[in-house]
Length: 269
Image 1: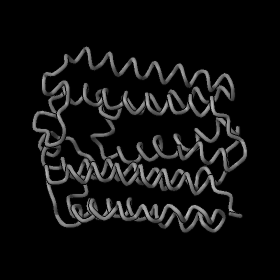
Image 2: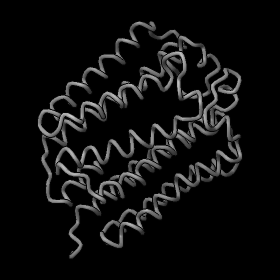
Image 3: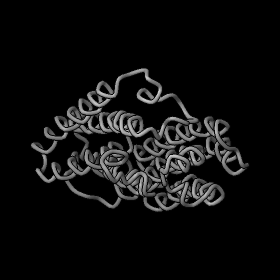
């Protein structure tokens, strides 16, 4: 949505391409969750999970079925991405291949990077920069400063989702040998990191407002940041942090909608 709003603001919206970009983003998001469910499940790292039920770990679905669902999603993302590459540049194939590899090796393979405190880096890069900048690029066919300026705060809020998720799971992940960034940093510093990922995007709005004053309409979304920040900074642990994950998702959605609206409103009124 944010990437499409950038394309409109840059005067180059092509809606069928935006639709394909949406298909790529959604398929990769669903696919990476199935892939993580599969890989964590067969490793046994979800055995003491505090969060929502996982398919493989709980026995609700066979590992082969979950793996098939992940591969089907990656195939759908690849097909939509191939169409976009054919319409724009074949370099997108390299970006798409990297995205699918990042999705799989987050918890898959013999040395998953998600177990080595690199998950937030990948989420910021692919669900922030690549998703937003890529969506704008396939429409305007150029890289623009506005796209990167919008991608950074969106990416940080998506990182906040992962940070609060991993904060909740510190005890179980540490026991399973899953060294997420939260496990490495410890609870107190992870809470500070979460607060930074939530607050900095609103500073980003002020930065964007220098060139696009109407993006200031995104500032009221800060109200949605209060409940999860209160839980995170108040010392909540385990299941008590589950609502913070939900509320962070609502914050991301509200921020994304209002920021996109601000991009679509002409600066003159």
